[in-house]
Length: 178
Image 1 (spheres, rainbow, N blue to C red):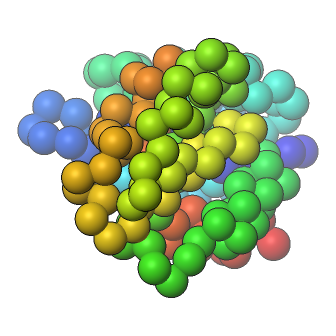
Image 2 (spheres, rainbow, N blue to C red; image 1 turned 180 degrees about the vertical axis):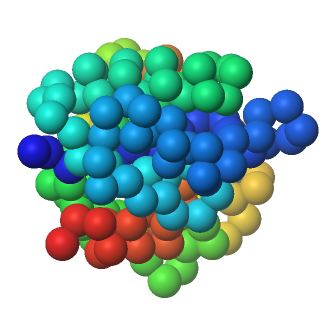
């Protein structure tokens, strides 16, 4: 059976979107998954399921999370191989001069025009590199004055996304994808 790593969007932000790790695990199991594990309280879940379609996995998890949490929880799933590739890209792109390296994990690949418009905003202190369903936001010194809005990536790409930092993604890949 395939193993996926799912990333939950917009949970544990403020008082109204609380979704503790124990509830996430219980809801994931209620969706029919086994071998469930969570990592930190930002919505990172490893699961094994008989479902072979990413879209079906995401839909089943989103329905279970809605039922358990009482609010919609957009979910973005990657196979272990896909996440390992995203982490390998992150390692390749990471540089010692970066102030921040965020990864936006995308539900779907962005359209070419959305991607082109975002990439046109690259500046001297910041850069966006999109590979498949991951957008790497590479922020250098002085990025606060740069052209790329770190919080506007999802809107600019026009897809559902959630962000994690370099350390979380590479740690998850080392822990769950080997």
